[in-house]
Length: 629
Image 1 (cartoon, rainbow, N blue to C red):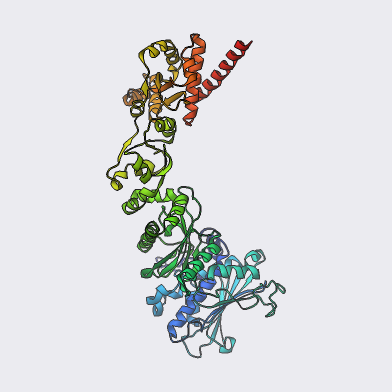
Image 2 (image 1 turned 45 degrees about the horizontal axis):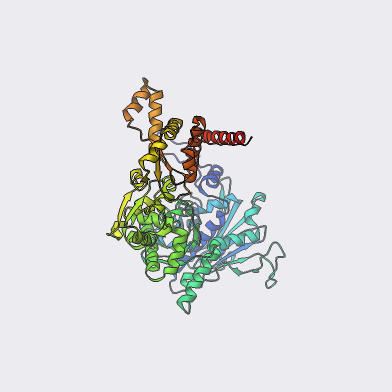
């Protein structure tokens, strides 16, 4: 914490920024760090980086020769390491200057990639839970170096003392915090232990925790001990992907069990991730259930063993929302808060490489495990469809396997194309629902293209099956498969059809009489969304005629296509209706047939249509009651 020079400055002289430490701590707590709990991560990170520097000085030392020890008993929190330590000059340079990191020292600048922290502000996070930081350190670089004590306070002041070497017999650093009363949530022994395991379970250096209780009790007495007892290991085992297993099956089960423990669900499968170029290892757990489209899960990212984030969405592309990952990387760059990843070329390359690993897994499942592929597609076909739209290899591999809603029920395109040489595809869900029953009875093969990606994918079917033909469903295509009635029947129904057209003119709807299957369907309403929009625009143009908006809408106006209510002469109800000679009853029956056909289409009803359905039902009920009386 560099303090300002209070001596007068001559005019034009350089001046030193004045730092309000309390304001800076408030900035960190509310804008840089997500929670006060990060203080322990920062202390552990500094300790691990100090161990890394110590190993650089003594490369022949065993990997577990140096470690980190945590202590919390409710009154203090202490983090002690066997790291490289600090000299008095280091203390003045690195602990008392905001923004300067010991990792920037010339001696280790070339090894900076070996360290987790790079920003030199981590120690300030301790002021989120304490008003004073006590540091006792002894350098391993200088033989017989004295111990150095540094005390930093939240008001921006600090003191430094040189102590005899006996004050700290071995090189390393001890940081001690006396928590404030309002920080108990984050400094209780059980919480400190939980945070240490949360952040440091994959660290490569040994880390232990002591709560001050008597060894061997295994209880929770004293000042808040843990069941693991004093000296409990925070990271007793290496990462599961770094262990050896007797068989591939045992390895697969162990990785799946780890994924279940971390994420709380049993993975459909686990995909091992290994990118040597950036030192990344980990697993991707395939979610066993459908994920809502566009919903992205956060991934658990460690950097050199230290947990960076549990919600790192940026590690995978958007289409990969069917997996959750746990990875540990060497070369990914954290942001200043060390709670997310810095978006740079390295991260972009890692994202592309991990996406390729997911594609490879899909390809292997398609080639060698149809049962797994089937379960995967049943849960995540939407994710695969989104990928297939932009990935020709996945398209060729999986398009025949993907399920679609068709007039033959849910079927794969491969199955459907064997039955229907010409595959018709609708542009909306409501259009499919309008025509599905009639098209099926007429022998037409129609696919619902209203869902995300489906219409585009169906049109690419000829790339996989060149013998297949795909076309958009046109109303004329369907009506061409409806048989006309004979002339005598049409003439007999002419008066009713005229009444029906007059009743439905308000909806720009024409009425025709045909015969089609199934007999149980009394009427078919053919009315696309585009046609309704065009009619609405035309109506607005007529209402605004003469004004500015009328000119604009008039310029856009086209011949508005009309809806068409096709009555089924084979249906007994329709045969009875067309013989009605009472004008009001004929109009009411036509309105009722229109309303029933509109409801069967399952599209949203306009207010006028809802009113028509209610009115026609009440009028028919009243007519039936009068007739019975």
